[in-house]
Length: 281
Ligand SMILES: [Zn+2]
Ligand SMILES: [Zn+2]
Image (cartoon, rainbow, N blue to C red; front, side, top):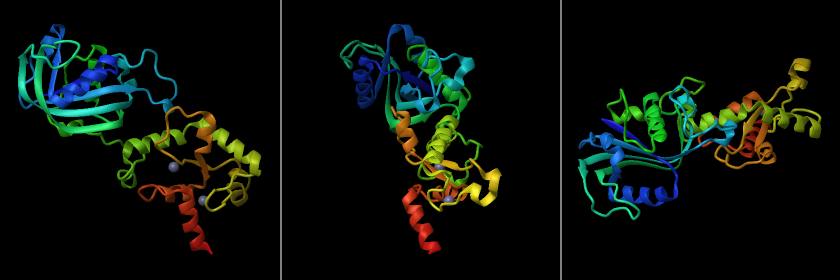
């Protein structure tokens, strides 16, 4: 059995969660005894610590992080930690002191087998639907130990394959979540429009920052206003104001944009420019 446990970022969790993780023990109050009492040796437990909405995706849904089952696709964002363990001792009851604020007497022991820290993109395009649903349910019920239905193997809660414009070029260094984030920002039409307006105002044309190709010059009227925007820093996304966001977009032609993403890690604008100039001079 695989279990999902959501832990929200509250002052007591900030103390209790690391204690539980380093001691390999998890416990709950009487009210949650039912769910935890089914946890057995060999089961997998997946702790998801604190989800926050990704600002790059716009305004969070109302009442986030509690979303209804129908809106499970909104249960998405960045989680601070995702820690997976294997249960080493089935459910037991103990009053032995582990946590400073309370007993949490209904417990199981586990050993950590996988640990992801520092921001993991979470949502149904990154993880199996049933896993996302279990984590959502756990989040809505103050951390119930929730069985992940239909999933028997840990490997099944890995990132799911998505079918949208992800080729093998993009499955490496940056990984799909970063790629998805990157594309979503380049698709941010309002920002892209502003970037192009800015470039048109300053230079009077939309020119590729690498090869200087200008769609209007090459294709005439149908090329007017056409260019791609590349997001220079895929990992900077928190608390950005619009001005910073605009600075992080580069105007590229379609070819140069493809070339920049061909190498892992992605090349910088100046690196590709150097390559381009060496080839063409
Ligand atoms: Zn170009
Ligand atoms: Zn790009």
